[in-house]
Length: 487
Image (cartoon, rainbow, N blue to C red; front, side, top):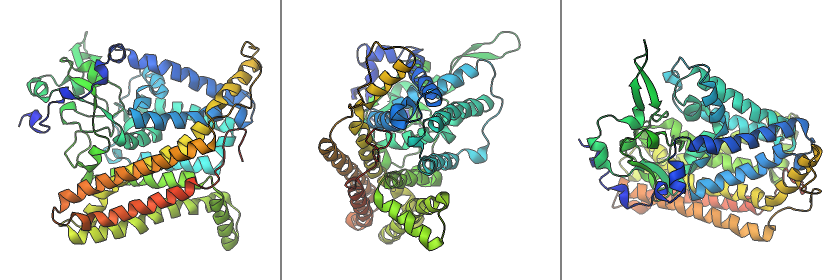
């Protein structure tokens, strides 16, 4: 079967970022990714150094301010308007690529570990450490966390071939893969007819030439390291926007194309490198974790959770923070999903021809937009209310090393007032809620054309519950962490 028959439409009519004058030409340059990574790497190094040697007061240290206020806010906004461009500019891969010039990885990642479970555990570990150790208030610990991230990426990809760390382990990468399902851009082929006629498949194999001496070949341009064959690729899951496929394609047939946000969440097509969503328990678990960890991350910053931990401590007669926080984590990330999703799957399976397990897997992805709305609402709160805090912190850091050209730190600079930010937060929640309803409805249409509403209803109810909880959360007084207004 011709590859074009898998996706019948020709993509050339869609907006293509790589055909935008100047920007497109820049992104298509072979070293464009490196040029994007270098300034991000420099900022990361400055953050680490200031975290170690600078003042150990979080609102006055670049490590905590840039990490917990600005980076998270910029990340979620870029994912919303464009896609996974952080992975494109990832500074960890700059160090990893430099390391691979010195030593080549020898092993393949074990088959039993080629899933998202490791990434989920590391994702959960970072969120737990953030709350348990109050990382937003510890510049030194934040700096070592960043440095450790570089070290782990270098170690894993120094031992194992391909993009093992990115695809299976990186917590930021797993977050980005799921979040970018709501993005309006994707890396995709322009014309599937061209792919039908292609004999070399360079987009995944890479461009090669005969090697010197005993070497059979040398790679001139690597192909996709996350094993996404472009003609059969759909959506953004596992795509790091590295553009290796763009540089490898001999026909200039791969672009960064526009698409309908959230559409990939309702598709159960067979995807290269991923398979079918309905058969990926680990990927569905990542989607569910993405949603409910958004609740947990916000809950950790409001007074009712502090009261809950105090109550648990009195009941269990302990003040050991890791245990109390761990119980809250289990309640929000394990028990709450079970209470909401299992009944919804059971009710909807009675109407459709699918069993409850398959319904649970399929409809778990429908929750991603409302989860994204929660992350967006939360992170934009910190980012927008602390937007200008980087200016005095940078002034102070420069003063500390004897550079006074930018004046004394203007510590009164903060960001947008809460009365401006809160409507934007509510808008983000409503937008995510609407996206989840759309995905649920489309899935229900596929499952039973004559009883769509009956299948849709229990999942819509779950979305409503999540929206109500999220709105309540965002209306609570929230800690202004890593800023001078921190509570």
